[in-house]
Length: 278
Image 1 (cartoon, helix red, strand yellow):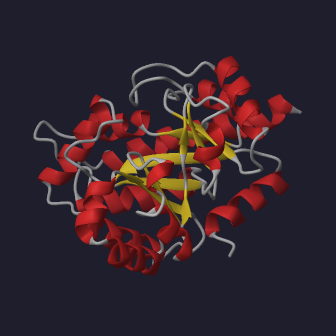
Image 2: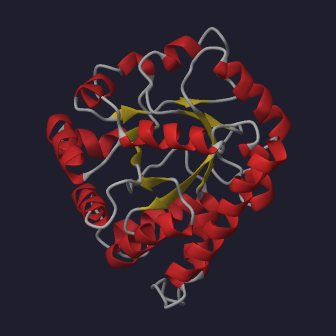
C-alpha cells in the first residue's frame, strides 16, 4: 500500500529536493485557531505536517512544546478532538501527509483498535510514538501497519550500528533522526555531524531520513536539508504561536499569520538546499 507519505517523498525525489516537515500542537492555543494554523501550513510551504497529541507527561519535549501541550489541555483538547481536527483539515486537503506525534498512554486509554480505525478514517497517515521501543512492536506498531498507517521510528546520536537494525525493522514512511542528545529546543543541530549520521543510517535502509530537534532558522534548515531527505521544525513554530498570544494566552489576529510567515521563511531555506547541493 502506498501512503500519502510514500507518495510525497516520491514526488519530492522527482523535484530533486528535501521535505519540509512542520510540527504543531493540536489545540494550541485553542481548537479553532489550531485548525486554522494547520490549514495554513501547506500554503506556507509545509510538505508534511506533524501534529502533537497533547499529553501531561511529555518526556522528550522541551519547555516550549510542554507549554503548548498544557495550553491545549487547558483549552479542553483531547485525542478524539485531535482526530476531529485532522478530519476538518482533510475536508480541504487530501494530499498533504499528516503524522500524529506523541506518547502511548492516550492511545492506550482510547483503545488501540478503536484509535487506529478512527485515525485512518480521519485521514491520518503515520504515527510517531516516542515512548514505544521496538521491543513493544506488537503493542501498536504492527497493528498500525496492518491498518495502513506508517509507523515512524526515532533514531538518535546514541543509536549505534548494533541497535539500528532493531529500530529500522518495522519502520515505514521515513526515519526520524533526532539531531541532538536531549529534549526538543535544547540545542542547535550540527549540520556536519548530522550529515555523517544520516549517511550512516542510509547504509542500513532505503527509507528517507528526516532530521529534527535543533532546527530554528532558515539557514540551519537549508544546511540540514543538503544531507537529509527532510528537515523537521517544531519548537520555533510553537514559539511563534506563543509569541502571538495576548496576555491571557489567547489567540490574536496575528497568530495564524505569525506562524505562516515563519513557516514560509523556513520553507525557503529548505528549498534553497537544492541549489546548494547541485
